[in-house]
Image (cartoon, rainbow, N blue to C red; front, side, top):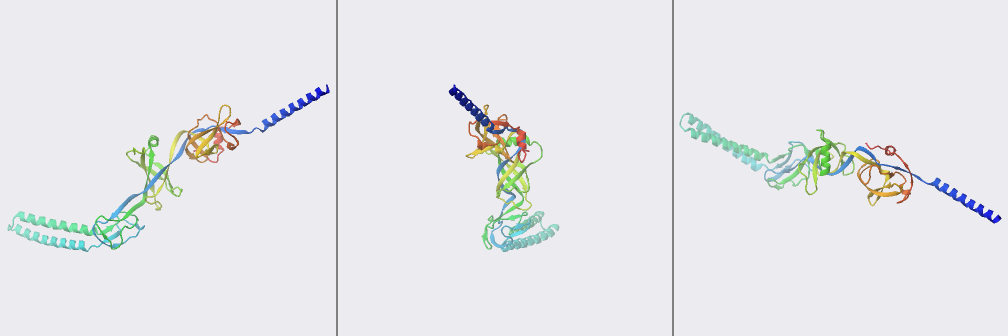
Length: 360
């Protein structure tokens, strides 16, 4: 009897210990917050690699052959419209002008004499007409000689910034030889290529006459202080790339931008019914982004997602999630694949409101 009593007491003790252990295990079970993607219309910023061009960028070439006698400008100098830049030795062209002027004076004297004789019916009207034609030709030769002489002075066709000098003082330059280049940097044309699908979205959502505002991220990752406008879209798509070129115009009052620079155009694009999730709900593996999705049994499953755009503290997801999926919001490092967890659901709007910034 005593032995049976001790056996019953021992079993009761084990049962009590087991109950306490289960209670303690249940008490210590971690509760994880989960949420779902927030469906919302938003603006995403897309980046496009761009080439920056001056609104006018021309080659300055010699218009006549001769020795480069004078240079009135230097590399990198700002020049004004009509400012004298180069002087090609004008001696030969001055001589040609003097010769043309002398021939014109002689032709004028002949014409006046012939006119007097014609008024007295000494010469025929045809001879007077020939004298007048000869005078007109001589005057045209004078005008042409003046043009050639003027070509020895090369002046700036517009306000701009001069580039590298291709010749040196005293060089013998041929007609058409490159002297330098000149850029009008008061405004800049920024070209960037847009895929066909995004072009169609752009044309569909931008039906108003207002220009699309864009920003420019320069090579140092700083955003240019002046916004630009998309003013031109080229006529044809590139069949090799499937892209079409857009051109945005940026003011450049401080001359910071130069011809030939590169950068990125930042264009805000409206996205309807976008799926938004907090960035903290994601993790990376080999440059790919993942989230933990809970199945119907509350088991954790990793799933790859595609991020369409990045907002402050928020990702816009284009693939990998639906609005009804439940994703792990916090404690990503505390769980493992296929683990069953206890969860507390947080409304998507509430989860977003707890972030430092909102998605607008």
